[in-house]
Amino acid sequence: MQYHAEVTIGLKSGMLDPEATTIKKALEHLGFPTDSLEMQKRFVLELDAPSRDAAQSQVDEMCRRLLANPVIHNFDIEIEESG
Amino acid sequence: MQYHAEVTIGLKSGMLDPEATTIKKALEHLGFPTDSLEMQKRFVLELDAPSRDAAQSQVDEMCRRLLANPVIHNFDIEIEESG
Image (cartoon, rainbow over all chains, first blue to last red; front, side, top):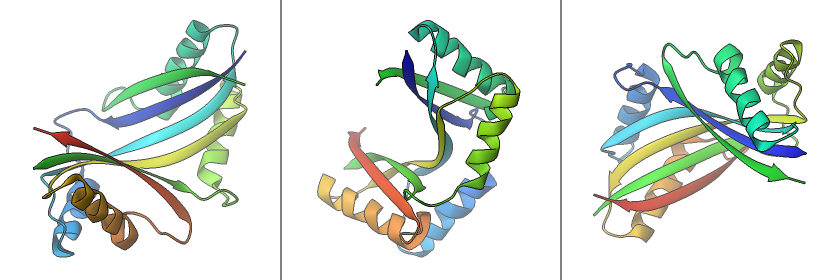
């Protein structure tokens, strides 16, 4: 079965994100004040797996081993059947 | 009124993404083959605006002027009332 996975990776709360701070300031200078701004990374992938649970655990392992750094990142995985 | 906006920015189809290609290969080497892998950037922001339409057009303008490069990126904006 083929599955469609969306992985959203962001910094854990309390971690500083100087890139987001800079972008927030730049938006202010352009006349677009915001109350908060966070940046996240997102991976959209298609994979084969025998079941939804297997797909979920494969993607979870991908996050832990390569996509995210579990020390500083939170990640969220959404899986849907596709095709 | 305060609004919560989620902006998802990705490369237009046909644009090469060497970082995504490298990550796809690295996952394969780790034993996680995928049929496709795309990377996106995501901004999660809170802003004040007089109406939902105003919030939408403010965020659209932020994307065009700073967050995305309309020549190479597609962007998608989701707005919700918050607080």
